Image (cartoon, rainbow, N blue to C red):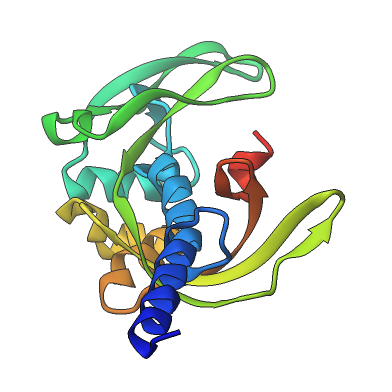
Length: 207
């Protein structure tokens, strides 16, 4: 067979392998993990019920103070009625927290259901993008499915300026890591599962 035909055949096989969605490749694993990140983000970093009124002498209000300082919440002086031992009902000083126009851009009313049926909202933002696939294992059969463990990095963009406040970053380590990810991508490990359509992130496969 002429050399040019051999080269053409090799190139054809290489292109076929690259386009095969079931191949164990960086391209396919990157697509599988990106599909998962596209669902996970915007991420609801801060779970909080708003509006909310807290007694002025309530314990830990660091989150409310941080969000107020960042311009996401307003704090208005108010009063609440409380039952005091041996004194009955009394009015106590309180602060009513509500969303600013900036806060409304990112707030979702029902993010998480609680044990007793009520729900809590959250401040959700960010877009994550896979920056690299650093390593992956040879696919192996586990409980009847073919699985590979993938090490990758990702960076998060579309973060509002207020989310980078020192007070908030101190409260949320994951937010801090995501804020820093453009300069230092977040490192993660995920399992990807081979399906009839190609590779899928393990958490999407189990849903």
